[in-house]
Image (tube, rainbow, N blue to C red; front, side, top):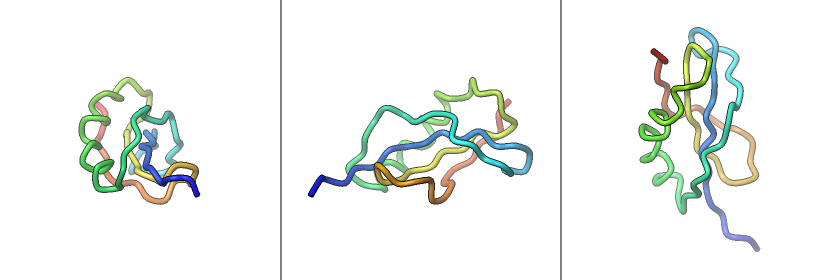
Length: 76
């Protein structure tokens, strides 16, 4: 059985956080979802170059699809 680790997806969203699309994945791996969520603000700050009205981030187990946006920051 492979160990479970978490990755962070950076999402680009339309107005009012509608129609979010995974724009990129952060290269870091986290041992727990709590560690991943603690790193969300710094990751969002590194990804403000995306051309979307809203940038969001999501922590998920490696290999899983997106489950829920955790933090959102308007671009500007």
